[in-house]
Amino acid sequence: SVVLLWLFILLLFFFIRVRRPKNFPPGPRPLPILGNLLQLDPVNPLKNLEGLKRRYGNVFSLYIGSRPAVVLNGLEVVREALVTRAAEYAGRPTHMMVSHLFKGKGIVMANYGSSWRDHRRFALTTLRNFGLGKRSMEERILEEVSHICTELESSAGAVSHTQRPSGSMDPQHLFHLAASNIICSLIFGERFEYDDPVILTLIQRLEEFTKEAIGPWAMLYEIMPVLRPLPLPFRNVFHKFDQMKEHIKKVVTKHKSSRVAGEPRDLLDCYLDQIDKTADGGSTFNDTQMVSLLLDLFIAGTDTTSNTLRSAMLYLMTNQHVQDRCHREIAEVLEGRADASFEDRHAMPYVQATIHEAQRMSDTVPLSVFHTTCSNTQIHSYQLPQGTTVIPNLSSVLHEEGQWKFPHEFNPENFLNEVGEFVKPEAFLPFSAGSRVCLGEGLARMELFLVLVTLLRRYRFVWPEDGGVPDFSLIFGGTQSPKPYRLGVRLRSSEELPTVSTREP
Ligand code: HEM
Image 1 (cartoon, rainbow, N blue to C red):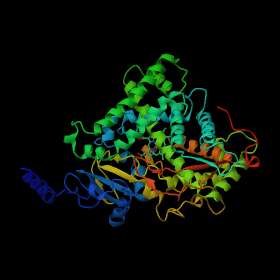
Image 2 (image 1 turned 90 degrees about the vertical axis):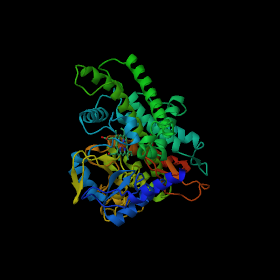
Image 3 (image 1 turned 45 degrees about the horizontal axis):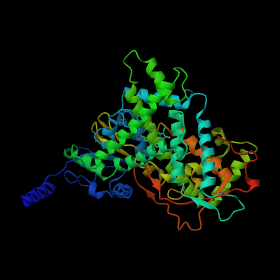
Image 4 (image 1 turned 135 degrees about the vertical axis):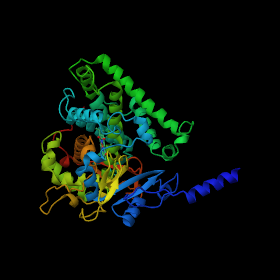
């Protein structure tokens, strides 16, 4: 009977042909059940996508299991879908493991509709304007930066310009904690010490969760729904997700007992006020949505920013001339002042160019978050039925030939015009575009600027002598990250340092 079963499976593979819908974008021939998964390297499918783009053009399709997905490459196509036809491409898949985890609640995996719209608007206005109590977003970020400095000076050795060689440290953990603290400060009103067990546990859950939620078991979950009720490792992901939710629920309970209505300290308090205001029914604001929103912001705002910071440091360490030029510009603009402000970016074209270039090369969310079509639509001359999964290949735009002076190398000149002014090419889309564009773009840009400006002003970062050969390749996951490395830290000599000491927390 085993032989018969194998024969049956072989017959299935050879004789059942998966057919693309009419006028659907072309692509490689899929196998039944598996689709084109065998043609994609699970460790890093970006190279395979690049090969398929060369073969089929900027719009092609492939099968993830039995479902077709359309991959969009290059600025023109990505913009046509996400911006020109924004409303038609603004849905989210409902069949993936992450969709089932989030159950369409919150923002990131919420389908295009009134609840998504209400929550997106609420989070944007709360983060942008008021509602965060007495302390602004900028102040909260600067507070965290002062903790990063303290930590750099203790973990990397008591760095001083007189001590050579410099101390070094792996910045992964520090940047992760700092990014998560900034989000926690905004949404929960508190940051945590870098050795606080609460934040360490939450971060560990997040790391495990992100690894497993996009790993091979998640793929199996997706392509073989019959396996879902079985006690296989993917149940772990659901368990970890629930643990994170439980943690958030505890913070909510604590907040409810200590809040004063109408006097919010953070985004959570603002949400509770919002529930009160709309309690007369018909509102999409409620406790369940609140927990999902808080989890969304925590998850979406941690890895992304910290991986970008790590990439930036890698490029800065290995390009001393760029670092020195940034330092000179920063020192000049901030002369006599304690802290940088986000407004200073307008007077720092080279620093701006460097940060944007680091972000382009860090390519942190290469395939965006998958979209789906909300109605029957088209792209180029192809027809896409409602519900088609769409993968915007942002990586292809960030390195597209013809859009960049130096598409494949780190060079701040990509963002400078002939007279040295900062210019942002349209192909700079690390946050995606259109109605689903990253909600945290403003926050992330402010974080990157204030963290990097403060650190570059105070320290020189050097590649440690025992650091081996720098490796710029990225580890692919939900987000991309550089491989672990050690950061050499040296305090700049006193004449290079700010005349006013950096702020105390
Ligand atoms: C969505 C990138 C930081 C919150 C996204 C998307 C990308 C992205 C590519 C998908 C957009 C789409 O579906 O087309 C990044 C990068 C970041 C960053 C590169 C840092 C360098 C943040 C931060 C927050 C955040 C700090 C927290 C406030 C979100 C949310 C969404 C999102 C809530 C879902 C938006 C929606 O579906 O309407 N981000 N992100 N992100 N991001 Fe970010």
